[in-house]
Image (cartoon, rainbow, N blue to C red; front, top):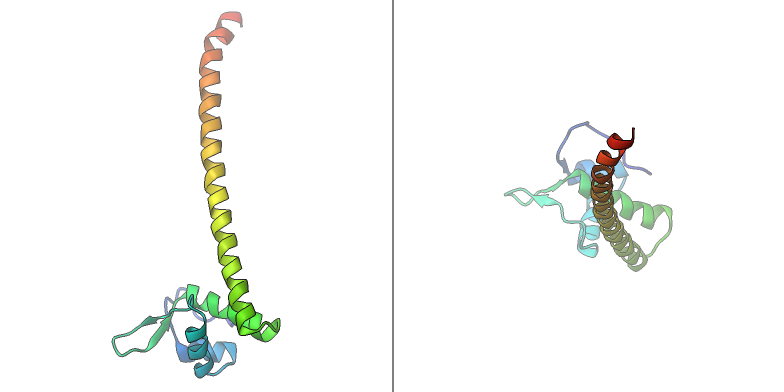
Amino acid sequence: MPLKEKTIGKLYWTIGEVAEQLGVNTSLLRYWEKEFGMLRPKRTNKGDRLYTQEDINTVRSIHELLKDRGFTIQGAKEHLRGAGKKVEATTEIRERLLRIRAELLDLRSALDAEEAPYATYHS
């Protein structure tokens, strides 16, 4: 069951709200928090959990892998770790491509600057 979208613009959700939206017990969310290191909701001074949208996205991924796709806990951990590596690799590739693009634009500008006097002279 997918997580229902609640209030647009809301920054934090309680563990009860997240559990209700997913249709699971709060104890299951606490268990997942122990099992999956990437799930670390913020805590109030009283120790209550406050889930951000990023936390909810992580919970949604865990829920899908375990409940919908039938992964084991270990399999879901490995899958999520692999997804994180893919994101890092994609980010690194994107940054590299942006640097190459900037260099190419600089070269193009330099070539245009060299050709400008020639184009004016022969036009």
